[in-house]
Length: 88
Image (cartoon, rainbow, N blue to C red; front, side, top):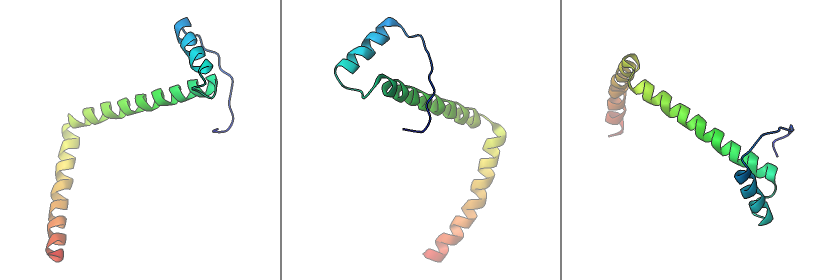
């Protein structure tokens, strides 16, 4: 899959284990390890997304960042107008 693996031991609620066994019995997942890894990767991706979202929201309240954005937009507005004049 992605290279080396390492054995890890976790405690899971019995209802989660039963659901995992049911999925395996129905042949829905290739293996318990693959399903658990896929679920963890999905959750880790979501946690990273939530972290980025929180940082964007924090930035949206940061007056210095907002000032920087305004300054950059003002600079590019002139450049965009010059380019538009050449095209038009």
